Image 1 (cartoon, one colour):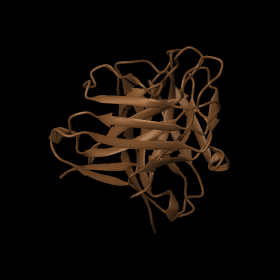
Image 2: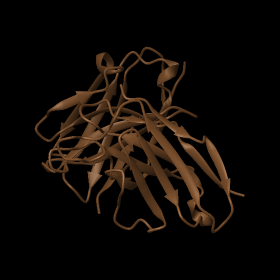
Image 3: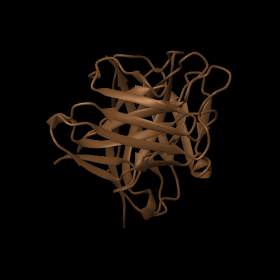
Length: 114
Length: 123
């Protein structure tokens, strides 16, 4: 199975400041056939299910604010919140869907307000 | 807008079989554009994909659970279901049903989720 490792486990950022979350996969999730990275990001608030933010590593889901962006390729990926808002307090997960299942998730990164 | 809702018992005894159902509204489980999944989250742990079913009946399960899992689909009720046997305390988790869109030939991310249901395995 592909192991997903996120860093840091938690971070505290001031309102309006940038938050950066990293995700590393144990093997590449870049497909040579279509040059796409099979990597997605979710946001989970307490008592709620995960919400899809970004897929194909950098494609924002419809309705997701543009302060959320994804980048990276191969094995190293980043989710950036350009200007942290109070409603962004949550746990963020990366997930790979490369090739055949099982699809696997990172352990999560908790974002709080400093 | 599609909505998914899990239903089933919140408490199950060790060694018994868990049965959960996901009811889909605003969309059809018979759509060829989506796969229907179960994902779980043990308390304080990462999310774990359990398996999926396609409208054709095609299934795929996480190898770590494959011997204990069955996912089925009832198109007449617009539902799909999960059965997990030989339960232990390690199966205590919030269980989610989720939809995965078929994007070209690729799938595996989840664009809609149910609210989740907590299942506790305890005598």
